[in-house]
Image (cartoon, rainbow, N blue to C red; front, side, top):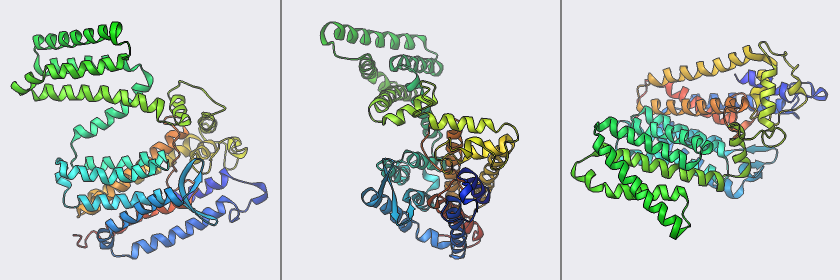
Length: 453
């Protein structure tokens, strides 16, 4: 995969005046140096005792977190993000190294607690280990790396976290896009209807259902009337939230005396969902930067800015689609050759694959990633120590998120957030980061017969 990536980087930035692939003034020449250095790094990782990674997991995590803090102060500002340390001609992105540091720390913490993820005292620190680097990368700001850290929740789910929490996370993602697509009030009404349906399915009591509906309509009607004639400053979203709160207060006695736990959970789900869609709406319109907001709107079809924010995605889709079934041939891609796609050797390297190697070449690349991920899952499941298994799933989660989002960006399925395609994209930091992530796990697997505390 690294060799394929190297040849595609050569194709993406090919220059007739610098046709030699070992020209170290060009990106493909520099990438070759990184590849050689990566081989040395891989050998170094493999000769270290596997117990080193368990005993020094927290120290490595602390160092990588310190780097994330220092880059906010000492890092170089590139394209509005302070994410890089610059040492002469070399630039390093600490967030790439923080990923394997976080994987090690999470594995170390859950080593003897993975069966206790139903307890708050275990799940809270585990979530904190994940959210701390996510917070630091969001301050840079680096939205891509921030989202990647959330992939570690897949590890928590594998190790026993409640499916309810995992499903809630998926619902939050779904509600995010629905909030962008639809009016808050209409979406809130739909959520109320779903909640009432859940109440009926769980109780089969029409009287209880109708009483709750009448109570909510009565409270909402009074609030709407007061606002219309007296207050005149509340929005419909605010009225809906207050109505739900007061309805909950009205039914608090019933929840308590009848021990209606199921109904109380449904109410909390409804209340939380309505508050969430309102907070998403506020964040989307007031917190996200204009270009981030535009990328989401373009992906959802609200805008078609092919010469502005949507230019990258539009050219990327054209590039991938123009490859057809068998591709145009190596170094024959017109979109690639004439540099229509920005960042084609980094975030949009898959465009080169799609244009020059076509559907067949793209299928081979995707197949390689799927094979790698399945193979890593098999290796993770055969580990004798919890630490090795948990770390292995951390590797799978990170690689899957990068693979899914990067190729999704290239074909317009996800917003452009700027993360590399593992082992393919140009860049020393990402190549080293993925090498550390992967080869530490291979070393743990090679030493699986050794005793790990």
